[in-house]
Image (tube, rainbow, N blue to C red):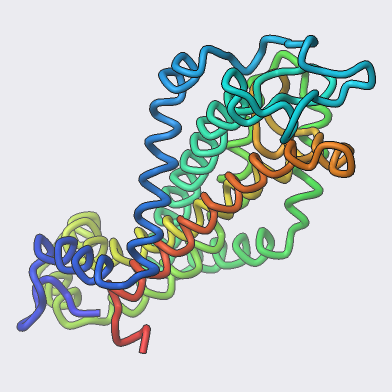
Length: 307
């Protein structure tokens, strides 16, 4: 990776624009951007969309169910009133649940990814640049976390915390904490390489402050890696939240969550498959979008590596 201060290097201000233009030249990149933008806008405008539908995700509509709790009519109760049908047993509007659930999934996924990126960048960068005993401590901690059964720990902790605890923030903290080790390993390796570059050694020889060198010369060269890693980690974080909600230890009801809806829909797949279709499709498309966007962004930033 060229330094921003090395001869022939592309100015840092030009990199985002050129990478974005390269990203939009690939069909997968365009698809990823469209899906990501769509779901971000969906989450941001969720209250407006729910208001336009005339429904909310909490109200029961028992008149839309038969005596056994199965939605009446075609497609799980799809109608001009309930655009995606209704939830079995409760009759809650499925469109409102899916739309508001987008807020939950994206908020938890993006927040956890930001937390993991922050911790991973700080730990990996400091270990790679300073080395010594601190590098040994961070490396051992990364090894422990990578081998730790994090899902089991998340399930256990989610089940034993008090009911009054804000589980949304708890989920963000747990998922983000167990996600920083992979970021730190990559950042550490690149920091160790950049530390040996001529422009960094010259700055150190001239008496440059370590924090100044890290902030002005090493970190700018790590931003492409950090951004790509963060983009690719968001779908994993969303999937982790969905898995925990599916297992019943995620965001507590009645807050809409795709994972909990999918978990509930499994029991109804034979009698009401539409209940599984819409939250499952939303989860699939948002993870696909972020993965396509992250892969295309990585190829755009590092075309040589892509070849």
